[in-house]
Image 1 (tube, rainbow, N blue to C red):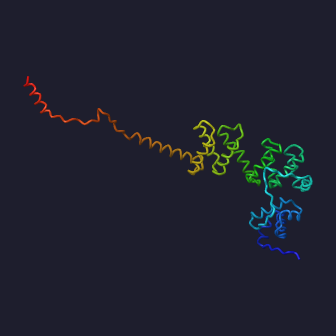
Image 2 (image 1 turned 90 degrees about the vertical axis):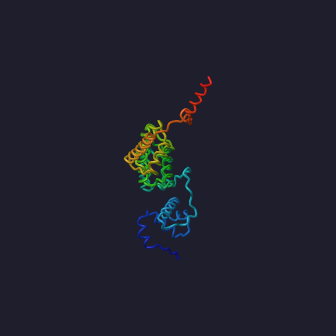
Image 3 (image 1 turned 135 degrees about the vertical axis):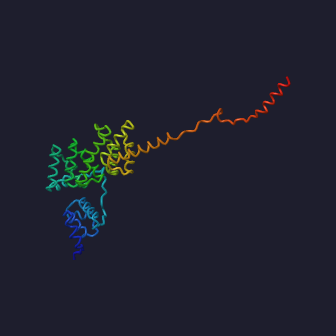
Length: 308
């Protein structure tokens, strides 16, 4: 007799319509098999284990179902899996994958090799990128003048590490780099080169963690060069940290702080001039005067004369 499973009507009405059809099938199969691992579910549905794991992650995020994962491989970004010809051929039968490969070939301007196809499929299967995100990735790399798949894979791994897994997140990232990074480097007088990793870390902090407007960051960079005579991301960071603590949100806020600082400095300067320093003491001024008895002196003088 088949085992019965129970699913609430609320879950069916609210969650199932929002989920991808494949994820719904995986959810139901997982419930049906009870404590099955990813391999068993994949075999039953004739899909990849990675699809099962991605579906489980989706449902866990929805906090609706938390299957027991008895064998879930850990993804190491530096270890890209190798895909066999049979596996790739199976996926290339799907229309959306076929269209993605055609788009990739058109963007890269060359026929795709077996290795190229394996890499692109890896972005989907290994890194978990949606197909539309892979198209954005390819467009971004090509627009920067890089068409080599090794470079594309490097960018894809960086996106995966930073949690860029949707088109919206990719758009924000691209805007930050193309507009934000370029403006900051230009404010430092360094528009002719790419930022190094340490410089990128500072710029990401200013734009994302501090969440400061680009014009405010630009002003800090310009002041850094004027005050130090050099490019110093650490010095600019100290300025921006103070402005962040002071609640600065616009360049007008900075001007207000500047005026307050100038007024405070002027008050201190005027107070210093108003205070008159006492005259210095020396041995010619600072002595105790003697008290002379002039009548006694005159008497002594008369007595001395009488002796003569």
